[in-house]
Image: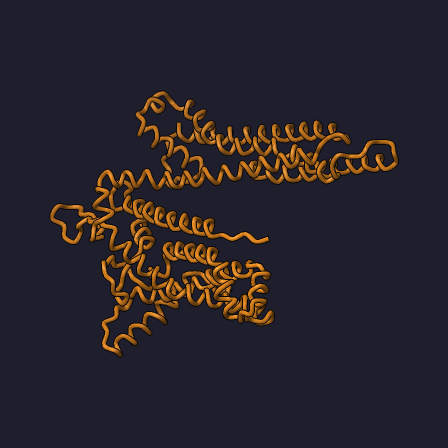
Amino acid sequence: MLLFYIPAALLILSSLAYRQGRDKAFALNYKAREGRNSRLHSRPTYYGLLTAFWCGIPGLLLYLFWLTASDWGLTGFVLRTLPADMRNLSGDQLNLLLNDLQNLVAGHVAVSDIDPAMQAAADFYHRLEFISSVALALVILTASIVAFAVVYRRIQPALRARNHVERIIRYALIACSTLAIFCTIGIVLSVLFESIRFFQQIPVADFLFGLKWSPQMAMRADQAGSSGSFGAIPVMAGTFMITAIAMLVAVPVGLLSAVYLSEYAGNTFRAVVKPLLEILAGIPTVVYGFFAALVVSPFIRQTGTLIGLDVSSESALAAGLVMGIMIIPFISSLSDDVINAVPQSLRDGSYGLGATKNETVMQVVLPAALPGIVGGVLLAVSRAIGETMIVVMAAGLSARLTANPLEAVTTVTVQIVTLLVGDQEFDSPKTMAAFALGLLLFIVTLILNVIALYIVRKYREEYE
């Protein structure tokens, strides 16, 4: 528990250090006004920030290092205290022993007949953890006080505090960017490695060009209904069909609403309608799913029955329509921002040449905003491809290769969820197929995002 108080203690110490550093800078500044000292290089706030940073950063680094390495170090030290017959187990047995020890330390043990050696090791772990936590707190406190004292003594008019503070902030931003990059690389590699394991059992060509998706694997040779087919084309076809329907709804409505709000609507109407429109973006997707399952799907089925069509109770059309409604605020907001960014001088020049308002919008404003609009639409497509809840509730789970939007289909994200629900064996093709689908989805959305960035950069216009 002591570890959880260290960040709060560091925050308090840094706040006090900021106050002390800034007060000393104010005192030096006061002497400079009386002619008893030279002027400060930076404002007093920067001296306070520099003192606070040096008081908190060393302790914070020590704390993060300890959080990363403490469990590994303490566990390794405790394992050395176990009897020799336990320490000399094989690799797999030693891993099981390590898991038992970690569960015992965490208190996640329901049995009563615990090995006395393991119980003693767990008790020793707890004692080491407490001692090391106290030692860590003392070390961090000492490091913070020493760092504060060194920086506090260095506060002089010639100290370039602002430069030091800006350098520390730049390093912090670089560290955050590096962490984000490594997290992204880690996520991609985790999906890639599992996908490679899948493709070692299922050929890549069968996955990419197969026309049948039936991931149920047979447990026996004579088991029926478990073919184990992993052709991704029906799943991708369902994904693209629902996405296309959603875009047919969202793009015209979202773009036209953006044009009206930015070019034709009055300020009062715009101030009221735009927030109401953007409220749609805050509605949880499960609510859209209920709307699709309870309202849109029955309406489509009843309407199709009246005109003699065979409509499934769950259809791609219902999911696509509701998904399009969900994406309208996304496209509308992005397009509205892009259209408003078009300089007013272009409109004034068009009016000066005698063009009407409609001609100005169609021939000047929209062409100038086209790269941003296209980029926003492609980003909306990426969002539609990744949507899951609406498809589960309105389109069904049937991986069917069809061009009829009135039939039930499924999408990549829905199949990923289906494959990973419940207790799964992570060495079976059925489970690893989810990672292959995830990798395929990642590549598709990455291509769409790259195209969007290319279009925006190629056709972007810069105005003064």
